Image 1 (cartoon, rainbow, N blue to C red):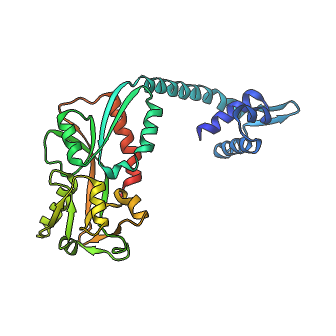
Image 2: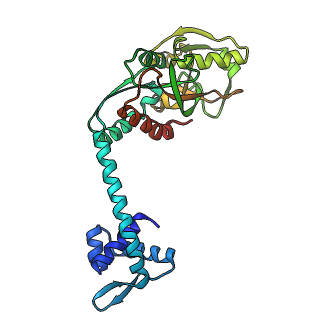
Image 3: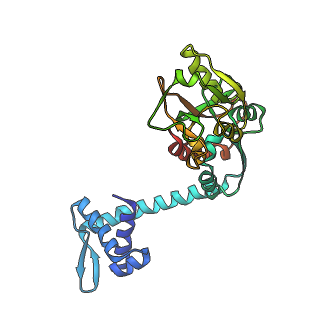
Length: 297
């Protein structure tokens, strides 16, 4: 049974009229009648008897009404309590995310603000090394990082997996022609410094394959890194979510990587020595709920 069908049933029971109940619930009469039919079909009984004065409850309808009215009232009361609790979440929360996550932030911020209007929110979009430093230094409450963390000072919970793509100058790479990681490693790469998660992930894959990377340029700024790649100054490895806009604009090209496929695990991290506030816990739940579905893979 669906809650909306039970609400419809109670409204018709109170009004004794499909048309009046439909007006009260802002439903069309066919839609309201469909709710009642669905409920009757699921229960295998007729809930109403039509008379000259309208609809009245059948014996089965009377029994259902006695049980359901208290149930729906309890659900409504619980919902009101939860809304009051939501409105009581106050304070500040500072969260750091890498640029590849930034593409989904607008919807996340809108959702958080609508649910927790009394919380002051600060968002820092930066490479993972900066986010990590903010967590360790106490300027950030939460941060999205990538395994391995290589520190015992942070706790983390997995969020999603990302696949890294081979990014090059416009027109050079295509999704239909994957590149082996050995071939990728032999090309000049433009990557962030070793303090950042992306560099550590790529270095780990290279070590496993006994490969030596050629990194003539290190850049800790995503826009500048992509601008150099687009001008033919090297190649890089990034998730498609991080380059979606420049790919669509034709400023870079991309191809999958295989043997092996390069994947990294995004985690939500926080300092072990810093208790998380209700505002931070609410943001943690929303990050996992909304961004994971959008950015996975």
